[in-house]
Image (cartoon, rainbow, N blue to C red; front, side, top):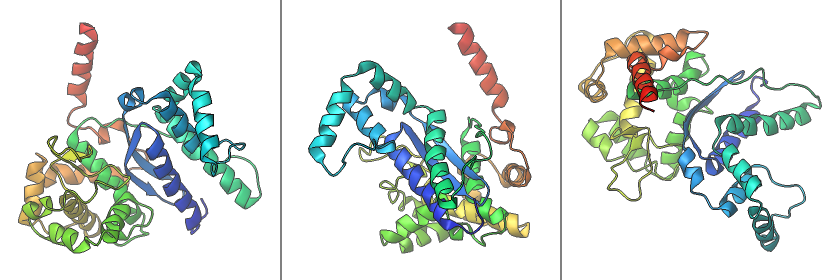
Amino acid sequence: MVDGNHDRKHWIEDRLQKLTENFALSVGGFAILNNHLHVLCRLDPKVADEWFASDVIRRWIAVYPPKTLDFSNEKAVTNWIEQYAKEKNRVMELRNQLKNLGWFIKSLKEPLARLANRADHCRGTFWEGRYKSIAIIDNEALLATCAYIDLNPLAAGIANTPEQSCHTSIKQRVDHVRCKGQLPRLRAAREGTVAASDLAGSMEQDLWLVPIEGRSVKDKCSREGILETFPLGSYMMLVDYTGRMYRNGKANMNATIKEIFSRLETNVEAWQPRIDRMLHSHRLRGNFFAMNNMTQHAIAKEQANRRS
């Protein structure tokens, strides 16, 4: 992407939201920089298995609108969906594509490449290469990955604080809270105790991104979040602390931050090296994202294979 061309970064943000609304896949975090982007994805393939055939067709044409279909004509759209919903093999193919990470990335990259080439009056490759996918298998690594993604612009020197980082998930979260008129509530949660931040836990339930906090299963209106009982206010404090640590080499470890690390069953001595390696490495490796449990995960997988 051309440096300073914010339009293209907005294209990516808008496309990510469009795909999240239609794929059986959720976006938990993203950062769009001048020459690369990071996206944290959660695959929910079982969700796609429950869609009606008409749902599959409706979602697919939202992602890839047919040129001959007049979307302003509701009856024509309904007839189109009903017609193609009868084609069982086609529905099965599209259902599988709508729960596939490779198709998600393809559906992100191809339309944007065409838009960019049209804008530049040129042809050829827009994206540099194939995406790299790394599995995340433990909660601490999951939260570290979220923080790493949101701190990317700060590490690149193009933002002073995480929430000022344009085209990132953390800015989307803060802007969403601001639009709801609840920014003072988030500030109180961020600057207060963990107990205070618990009060801010429901603010992301209508945001297109995966909420930071996974709410109680008793809450029927809740969506599955990134980490159970870990609210946005606590995440903001953690990212702010980590950002200060990265910028200044040190940060004030107050009682609230200590409590957060305690809830995560980790400590700053473990957290800081992990974030350091992720932010300073020129090549990300899988063991950055699941340092503590890679061996246990491999053993469990081997045992499961033996049982089957």
